[in-house]
Length: 81
Length: 139
Image 1 (tube, each protein chain N blue to C red):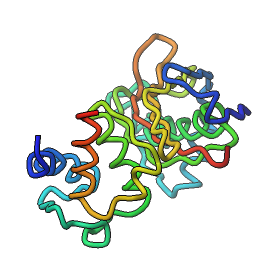
Image 2: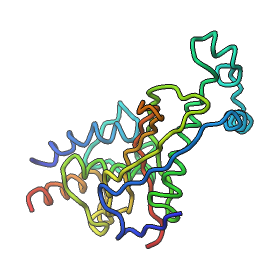
Image 3: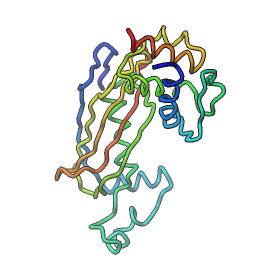
Image 4: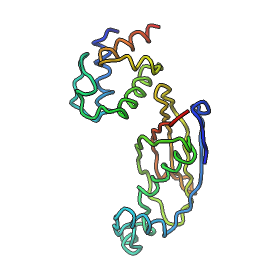
């Protein structure tokens, strides 16, 4: 899978957790861009993404992320690991 | 009160306790929340509506999920993050409710647990089901 495909899969996960059905993610989307993407929502997003892809993130991996594109690339790396 | 650390927790770890519902609980809940709807407060009104007696507030039975997290699972270090609950059946005064939960997921990066929980009455009827999210403070 490439980054665009991953972001398309993340779209409904983010929309559900953030309760924003019209949310449109791009690789450049960051937390301050999105209403309600606060620290607690972020924890819930990480949990939902872990369950969707059946993988576990380390805190250090998450702290290096700057935007949704970085998250997508991290997922690709972990799925390939 | 339990005092589980993160290392103590695992998927499948559970807790259960029982609660006897009294009329005083409904009166206290109405006073606390300001919800004095007659379905919960007026026996004749509730019976006319087809119930055997005053209907226990759904949010009263759901409030026991707070106790489940704060006192049992994980207990002392808990910070409740969210409750996603559904009311399945009404509870009545005099019901002996069993409140139980089991860890279904561990978000290790942020030390958050997901608990699948339920409230069941003395006849085995499900009163409510919920998914709870709670963080664990400290170590």
